[in-house]
Each structure stands twice: as structure tokens, then as C-alpha cells.
Length: 314
Ligand SMILES: C[S@@+](CC[C@H](N)C(=O)[O-])C[C@H]1O[C@@H](n2cnc3c(N)ncnc32)[C@H](O)[C@@H]1O
Image (cartoon, rainbow, N blue to C red):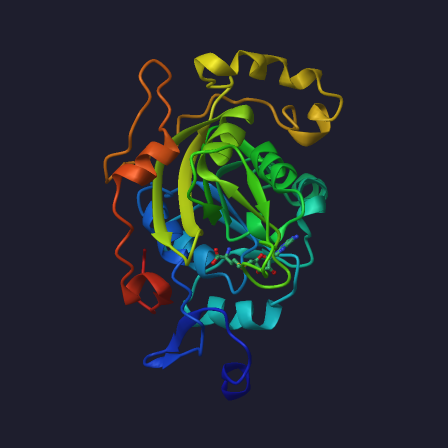
């Protein structure tokens, strides 16, 4: 444990009473956790993409999720095993899953589970998830729409996705590259910062209904933004977005959003309780994410929301 505590840690995680990893206490995970606390994850199958040291899976497992899969492009296996043991929870950790191979990795995993199921019985493995968390990822990838679509491809109808990312708080449909002319906005491995209206559009383009949002400031021209959206079986488009219906005519669309990966078993919607006052669009039913951001105060980030204490369930 001493050796592990000397390493780089992203999160401040309590590993034994009073013993906390020397994490960076980045505040953005607070907005993800705030939205997560409003999802009733009990009995739900959850996927955390870009899990880092598995803070989100620990919370999901403690709150009674029926199965949690945590994936990351890197391998933090030793730290994750220690965190899992310290918090006495169980979840699957799959390292080495780069976002471009997310869907294939999950398909191969389920194929393996299916063989085991045939020999050993037990519940039939499922490819789809009830809850998908995509937090702190989109500004790290070269093609955010592809990664959002891959995450959506694994979410069953009625399921919920939380997306958290760095955004530009502008009323426009833009993505800005991390280089702003005079220097890099974030670190050297970061990529695109999209605007909130564009994220809202992408979610609806991929058959998701935005429900709620949280944000915090993050320096000049940047904010951290999190939203929750429900998978639906249509595009909840706005009147000006009629052409969204023809999106599948694009030759790349079928590979972008894999719509037929699993049967639709008509499961009930995953319960979600809004806390603040999201601004909803009349006639469409979706939350207007940018209007909600403008109408709301930044989340009050408390230490409990950036550290993971042994007793934490949020
Ligand atoms: C900023 S951290 C976010 C951690 C956590 N999800 C959160 O919100 O606090 C980004 C994580 O995504 C992983 N990651 C970055 N780019 C990735 C990619 N292309 N494919 C898979 N994982 C990636 C990193 O290894 C890291 O664990």
C-alpha cells in the first residue's frame, strides 16, 4: 500500500480510515457524480468508459448496480484492484480498451461470456447496458462524435447516459481545437472542445433525449459540463432539424451508430429524478441544455464530491 500511495493518483481515494491517495482533486467529477446521484442504478447494468482509477464504478457498485463494467485505454489494474478491495465492492475492470475498439471489445467479451454460460449456466450475458457513463473523455479523443456514438450503441432503449466534458459556453454549433492561436487551451493530449448546443444536437442525432445538466467554470472561455440523456427509438429533433431524419443516408452512419446490436426487450425506463430546474423545449420534450446552463448556477463543488471516502455512496 505504501508503494502504491507513492504513485501518481488522479483521484483522492480513501484506502483505509484516514489514508487518502494523493489525488489531484479535479472538480469536474463532481458534476458527473451529482447527476449520477439522481439515477436509480439499483439492479442496473452500468458501463463506465475511461474509468481512470474506478471512482465511478465504486459508487455504482455501492449503490446496488447489478453489474458494473469499467473500461479504459490504459491499464491501472494494480491501483484499481487496491481501490476495489479497500471499498469492498465488485466490478469488472477491462484495461486496454481504446475508444475506437470499444464496441468490438464489448462484443468479444459477451461472446466469451456466452460460451461460459453455455457450459456453466447462469444468467444469459447481455451486450447492452442500462446506464453508460462517458465522463472526461470527449475532449481527449480525435473524433468525439464517433466515441459518443460508440457509447450510444451499447445503451439500451430507456437507458441513461451521462456525458461530461470540457465545453465552450457559446450559443453556436462549433468545435474548437485545443490550440487557440496563442497557445494550448488544455494539456497537449487534449483535442476538441465543443459547444453545448452542438453536444445537445449530437445527443438527439444519436437518438437520445437530453434530460438535465450541470456545469462549473473552468477558466477563460471553457467550462466543464455534464448532462444526462435517455436513449429513445427516434431522433427528438427540433423544427429546424427536419433533415436529421435523413442522417442514415450518410454512407458512414451505419458504422457510426450501431443500432441493431441487441434485441429491444422493452425494458422499463431507468428512473431519473431531476433536482434543479432544467429548461424543457415545448413540444419536443427535451431539455435545452444550453438554456439550462444559462439559467442555472454552477454546481457548488464540495470536498465530498471530489474525494472518494470509504462511506461515500454519491
Ligand atoms: C480525464 S480522465 C477521466 C476519468 C473519469 N472518467 C472522470 O470523469 O473522472 C480520462 C480517462 O480516459 C482515458 N482515455 C483517454 N483517451 C482515451 C481513449 N482514446 N480511449 C480509451 N480511454 C481513454 C484515460 O486513460 C483516462 O483514464
